[in-house]
Amino acid sequence: MILKIQFRCPACHGSQYRTSPYDVTEKNRFGAKCIFCKSAMVAGDDLCHLAITDTPKLAEYRR
Image 1: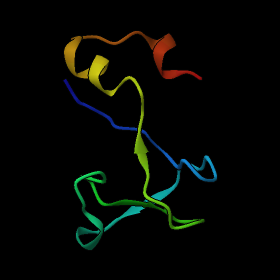
Image 2 (image 1 turned 90 degrees about the horizontal axis):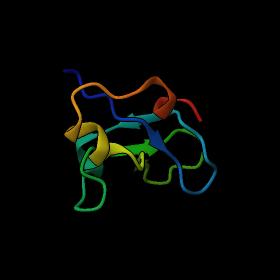
Image 3 (image 1 turned 135 degrees about the vertical axis):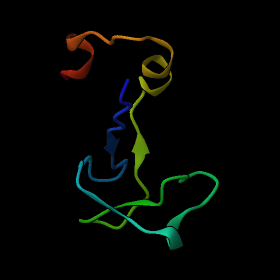
């Protein structure tokens, strides 16, 4: 099973980001920052659900 994490920017709602080991904090474990507004990215809501189930449904990925 491959776990794919989708990030969203809480400020501008963008989904493009860069990661850096210098930006890793307790709240931002992956060090992902938005390329537009430089805010820390937030992982998707169904991250816990994806880690528990073996085969996530396609409808859960579409929003």
